[in-house]
Each structure stands twice: as structure tokens, then as C-alpha cells.
Amino acid sequence: MPKAPLTLTEFVILFSLITSLTALSIDAMLPALSEIGQDLGVDNPNNTQLIISLFIFGMVFGEIVFGPLSDAIGRKGAIVIGLAIYAVGAVVAATAMSMEMMLAGRIIQGFGASGPKIAARALIRDQYRGDAMARILSIIFMVFILVPMVAPAIGQGILILAHWRMIFVVFVAAAFVSAAWLMARQSETLPRERRIPIVVGPLLANARLIFSHPGVMAHTVAVGFVFGAFLLYLSTSEALFRDLYDAEAGFPLYFAILAFGLGLASMANARLVMRFGMYRLSVYSLVWLIACGLALLAVTLAYSGIPPFWVFMVGFFAMFASIGILFGDLNALAMQPLGRIAGIGTSVVSSVSSLIAVVVAVVVGRVYDGTATPVVVSFVVCAVMALFLAYLARQTPTEDI
Image 1 (cartoon, rainbow, N blue to C red):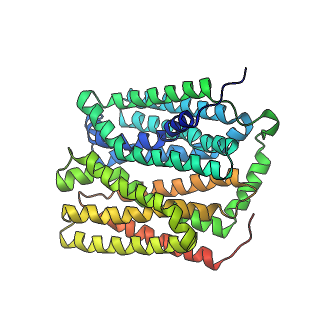
Image 2: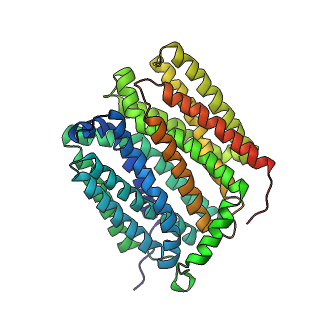
Image 3: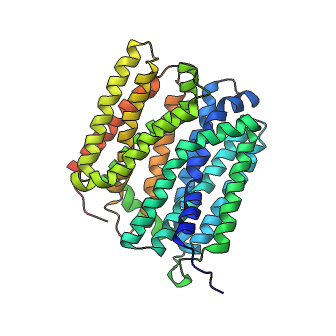
């Protein structure tokens, strides 16, 4: 018997919950990193950054798998499988007695989180078209923006009331509720006759086309550098506020303020991009990011690596405004030539950029020294590299695939 269609409100709430699991799984962990390190006997505090970056590392592989899988078995099946794997990873992390087991659980979690991320987008694309789809995505994105603003407060609230392991129990509960709600209320949107079996040969051939396209790869690597600087900030943010300003108690509030800058710019981008175009707006944003980063770096060096708190907040707010624009526009530039193979193209662009981001965050995170200098330098260097790659892609025009 066919399910009664979801109302718009129920649909938005359900898919906001499903798509927000990634941000929740990263940002709710931030206040707990130091406690986890102490409980698991981590000698080098910088190693706790891996709890964030290796979650993204798991997503690198999941993004490759779940795109074709959702085309082969349907959107609901791919989402539920992803949620189940995500929950298994959360259980492994919750019961971890060593850092190695914790990181294994986080990789599994990240792999599973890719299922809801990739397949939910495809389901929305199946069910809505044109302006209706744009409206749905806009509403979901507005809800999604709120998650990084409130997730650290959720994590800190759990720490006040219970042990850090309870954060992972919340992750499991969120996955279970999402899966049960989806199965009970949402109909499958990909009929059997439209499903595409997984055939290795054509997938590899399409992947070769993507990797050999200079414009796609230049913009993909540029996304990776920008994401890498941001991931480095996420991995070190709790330590930065604690070590530099002894502001551990106020961390959720300060994190939310900076996240607001990112979200505000993302919403403004929809109007700005129509006026300036993706490429010009990306270049303007990268130049702004470099200028803000250099100004913040000058003050940081003048104050022996610890800039005044208000300078730190203003500087990062300004840089995050650039990143809020760059995430959307650089990804769109990377995807623009991939019309007929957009499905696997999305998986390749997401996974490659995520892998580069993880490398940047892990390598630079290892040299975090209790000052803001390594993080600010990383923002400047990554922005310069991204600007060079965007310019290089512009100078080598290529045809659409």
C-alpha cells in the first residue's frame, strides 16, 4: 500500500535531520576532545585532532561508494545502510578503551555518514524539480546552517550532565530515529526500471574522464585546500580557545558566532553569484581571504602567536565569510563540465577534495604549538594555492564531458 505523501514541513524536518548528521558528528565532539584524550591516555594532545579529521577521511571512501550504490539499489536503501554503518561506528567509538579503537570507530562513522549525505541529495533531486527543488534545498540549508552553531553547545551540555561517551549514544539515537522515520513515512523515489547496476568498467572509464579533465581537477583541488584550512580550524578550535584565551567555558558561544559568519555568507552567495558569476566571485573571495589572513598573521606575529581576542574573532569571522562563498562556488565550478556523468562526478569531486583536506589538516595539525600562527599561516597558504588553481583552470579552457 503506497505511503501517504509527507507534508512539506515533515519532509524538510526529516531531511534536515538526515543531512545534519555530518555536521553534528563533527561539531558536537569539539568540547570533548581534551577529556577523550585524557581518558584514553593520549600522550600528544595534537593526536586528538584526528578524531575530527579521520571522520572526514572515512567519508572519502563512503562518497565513492554511496553514489553508485544509491543508483543501483534505490535512495532509501542507501540511506538506511549508511545510517546503520554510522551507528556501528558510533558504538565502536563509544566503547573505545584506546585511541586506536576510537579512531577506527570514527572512520567507520564517517564512511556511514556518506550514505545519508549522498543519497538524500539524490532523493530530493528525484522528487523535486526546478524552483521547487531550489526552495526545498534552500530551506534545508538554512536549518543545516544552525547545526554548527548549536552542536558544540549540545556536546558541552552532555559533558556537564554525563560522560563524553554519551555523545555517541546521542549519535546512535539520531541515526535510529532518522532510519525509522524514513522507512515509515518516505516512499522510494527511484523505480526499479530506472536503477543502474554497478558495473566496474563504465565506472572506471567515467572516473578516468573526470581525472583527466584539467578544469574539474584544478577546481577540485582548490576546494580541497579551502576545506583543508577550515578542517584544520575545526580540529584545533577547542584547543585554540582553551590554550590562547582560557575560554573553554565560552567555546560553544564563540564557535557559534564564527559559524554565523560562514552561514551568513553562504546565504548571501545565492544573490551575489547572479551578479558577479561563480569565477569572479571565487577570485574576489580568495583575494579577500588572503588579505584578511595576512592582516591577522601580522597581528599574530606581533603578539608572539596570541593576537588579542577581539582581533582573533574579527579576523576569523572575516575569513569565514569568504569560505562560506567559496564552498558553494568552487564546487559548482568543479561540477560544471560534468553534465552527463554528474552522479559519479559528485562522488569523485567530494572524495578527492575531502582527501586533500584531511592531508592538510593532519599535516599542519601536527605542528600546532599552542599559538594561532600555524592555523593562520595555513589559511593564507591554502588560499594562495586555491587562487592559483582557479586562475590555472581559467587559462586552460576545456569542453564539457
